[in-house]
Length: 137
Image (cartoon, helix red, strand yellow):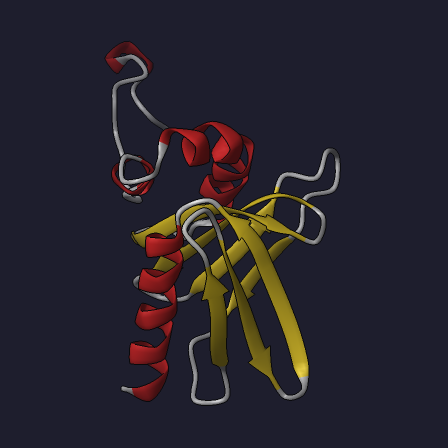
């Protein structure tokens, strides 16, 4: 049990706060509900390497590359989607971007996951590069 006398404190054991700090103001604001869902899905000791807000399955979402996996969540009210994606040799990623937003498509065994309306294209490219590096390496 945590020490109640210690108070809430300011901890960022998963690195989510640091990753959110890299986002544009718009991405921070729109993604906040999904970031809270994401926090509940992280395993003990898992650290977020890169993160962005997005749209996933029609709802505000978050896309996170951690030290262990890729996680895609959304903040659909009462029934959020939580999708952990293992980073193995069968996973491919492709994407496109303009100066305002980006989209990524993750594919495996003929199935595709589309993550779009990413407000920070540079972070989408960073996540895609990180996924490719892990899958290829």
